[in-house]
Length: 132
Image (cartoon, rainbow, N blue to C red; front, side, top):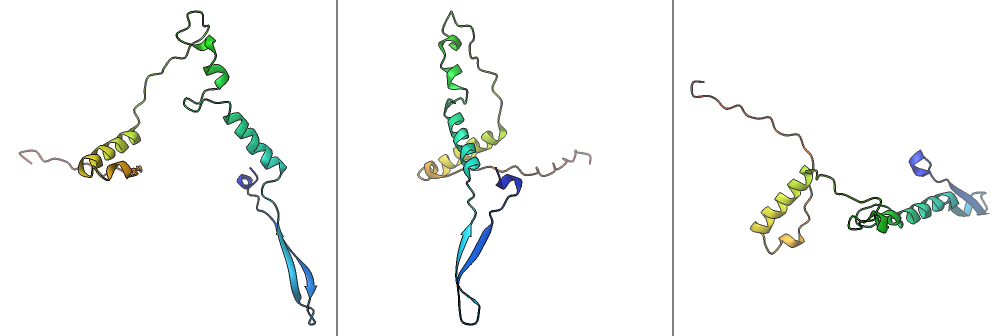
């Protein structure tokens, strides 16, 4: 959290020996610890919190494993229901890329990593009519 606020660790050099000319001959350099007690506490708290969530759906385990929320339990007071799916156009581009490469390079396709990036669409070219 400190780094997000612009904090930088301090570096200190302490001279431990001087030569005959009065110049530093030996020194010890130390750097301020980035992970102090507060930072470690934040990370431990995050780890504890994430440990209370379902790894698949991200819901709190105490709720999503409670029989009172089971859609198949007729006595349940609540239930989980699926929302309408949303079309992800990034996923659409990924799937199309995977399908294309699985056809053209079937031996390599399982080992390929597909990524997408959002770019500006080129302007549409106008079609000329028969009389134009």
